[in-house]
Length: 360
Image (cartoon, rainbow, N blue to C red; front, top):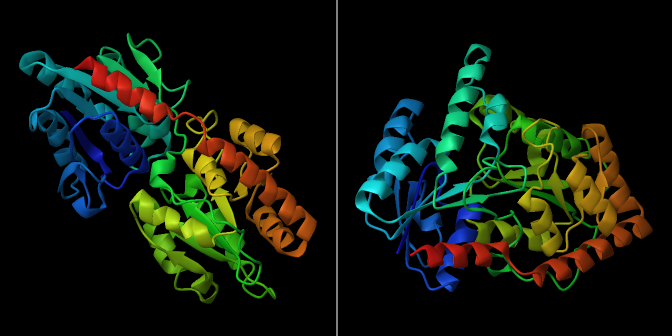
């Protein structure tokens, strides 16, 4: 039995769904306790949830939730649960697996609640948590650069697509009569929220305007701006789907023309390879992205995307996609070829699941 607890992630989280799917393929029984709507949690797992709370109650949960339920293997996702997870598995028996989604020490720079005066303390505390995580029986990290690098048993479980939670690649690319751009993920300024909206809204008076499907929660610091912006006339081109489980979110890709990945060039993102880029390609979607080194390299090597700097450049890329047939089909062909190859690549989630099950 594998028990998964998360005090900060919704049970609709895509990486969580991919992990559970791989564990089930490996023959493990799984229960999950996290946040959000249990109906949007991973299939074939027992899912329970609690309502979202403030930071103080989340801290208390980080001390108590690792003691919930019984499991041969406890898998935690959030760094703040690490001390309690280590203590719980040492006192009660069982093994502890820590899944580290991102470089949280750098990511805290992007959180509105971390005031400048708090930054040094918060980063020091995350460094302490990383040292605790390094002592887990198995540490899964989302990429090679993600700490802790000195973990005794560390496996890079990259955010690559799990085709079992994706619909089939559409047999044909959509036409240009009503083009749609797609973004799936957290919606916040540093992840391109405002750039995407302004870029698409700028096509409102074009002969062929674009539409934008946004899937995922909106950050608290962007919520007031977002709500006000969607009340403006050109925002009729924007459809907000909020948070969706992966299977529902990726159904929208069947009607999309391009995927969006407009992350800011921050220390937390600079060396990242977002899973959505792989997933866009696996669905045959060319990607419009900012110039993060690894994203640029992938899209240029596959000839499957466009690199942009700002909203104006994004609008220009969208217009060219519609107006230049040779350009459009070159990108579509590159994306579909890359996507077919990705769908036959061995999944790092299956290898991680094998390692988790072997711990028992």
